[in-house]
Each structure stands twice: as C-alpha cells, then as structure tokens.
Image (cartoon, rainbow, N blue to C red; front, top):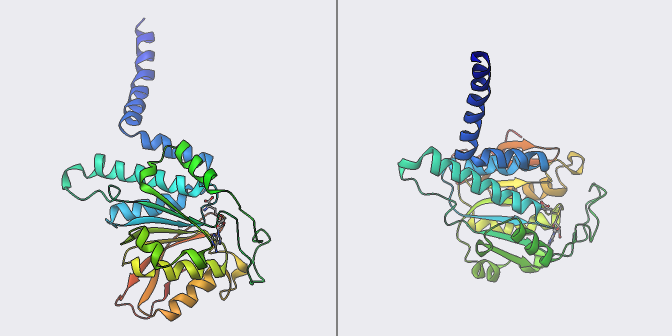
Length: 266
Ligand SMILES: C[S@@+](CC[C@H](N)C(=O)[O-])C[C@H]1O[C@@H](n2cnc3c(N)ncnc32)[C@H](O)[C@@H]1O
C-alpha cells in the first residue's frame, strides 16, 4: 500500500508541476506547437523577443503576405512574447507594453510576383507565383484569431501602392518590425524607399530571401539592400540573426557613430 502511494505521488508531483507551468504560461505550449507546425517560427520569435525586451515601439509591416502564414505567425509571436514579458516577467516595472498600440499592416499585389530582371533568381520566382486573393488573406487571419481591428491591407503593385498617400491613410508613424518577403530586387527597392522615413534606431528588418541569388550581392534582396545603404549613408544595419535556409534579421542604426559599418558581420 505504501509502495503504491509513493508511486502515485512520484507520478502526480511532476505532472502537477507541468500542468501549473502550462496554465501560468500557455504560450510555452502554443509556441512549441507552432514551431512543430511551421519551421519558420524562429525569425518572428527572435524579432519579437528583441523588440519587446528593448521597448521598440511602432507597427509591424509585412511586404508580400500571400495567404498570411507569416503574418499570423508574427502576430502570435509578438502577442505571446509581450504577454509573457509584461504580464509575467516585468509586471511591476511600469514599462509600456509595446504590443498595446501595435498595428499590423499587410502589403501585397494579391496577384503574385511581378516580372523581374535578375538572372540569378531561384526558379520559383516567376511572374504570378504566390498568388492568393485578399479575401483568402482576411479569411485566414480571422480564422486564426487575430484582432482584425488592428490589421490593414494595402492591395497593389508596390511601385504604385507604396507612396505618401498610403503612409497617410495608414497613419504610419513608427515602425518596430518589418518582414520583407517579396522575393525580388525591384520589389525590395520599393519597400525600402517606402519604409525609410518611419525607421528609427532599433527597428528590426527581417529579410526572408537574404540567402538567395547564389550569393551575388548585386542582385536579389541583398542587391537592393546594398544599393539602398549606398544611397543612404546615415543608415547602417547590424546583423542580428540568421534562420532557416534563407532568412536574415538586422537592426537599424540611424546616424550612428559607427559611420563605416554598413552591414555589420553577416
Ligand atoms: C513568398 S510570397 C510571401 C509569403 C508570405 N510572407 C508568407 O509568409 O507566407 C511573396 C509575395 O510577395 C508579393 N509581391 C512580390 N513583389 C510584389 C510587388 N512588387 N508588389 C506587390 N506584391 C508583391 C507576391 O504577391 C507574393 O504574395
């Protein structure tokens, strides 16, 4: 009898600990599942952790949203991380919860990729690929439980849609995190020019297609970023993290003292 009681105790005790942990911190379980389901979780996790811990205020912008997978994951990681940090971690410090005022802006043609000139592009970068309607995007983010009152979509080719009127319509002021997932040089140039006035030191840039184009640094996303930095000598990027087979994250520095550092240690 004593043996049985001890055995039950030895099973129940750790079980109770695990259950308590999961009830207090459900995000642990959620993010674990999300990681299994979708391997690209990492980029958003790192961006969210950095932005929350460093109090980087502003909106989340994604250029090239397709059916919304990345958008949903970014929203989840930012909400989970800020919840964990502000509600469990630093509850009493009085720091502002950066998620409270964060809005989530989606930009896409909703007609797939445009034509591109770069010869080194991977085979999947052909005009029209990754086409999904705006309705599919809204439907999927609603079903995923995002607070859609915080979300905006801007439909159109970036060369036409990324302009001052759009920035005004969206009341853009500050950007905390940008996910650039539009694959090709021309689109990335349009994005960088559009976001520039709203970046500040500390903003995080995630480039999904950094390690593409056979390492040719005059083409693809790398080519666009290097050209942009060349034209804007007051901006530099500090390398932060690489994940999966192609993504790189950077932290923006504006008018920094490290004038000569354009891209730091990639
Ligand atoms: C690889 S998909 C994006 C995937 C998405 N971020 C995700 O996580 O599932 C690339 C997207 O970029 C969009 N895109 C690329 N260049 C564009 C441009 N110049 N204007 C508008 N949309 C563009 C395409 O329509 C496509 O939806």
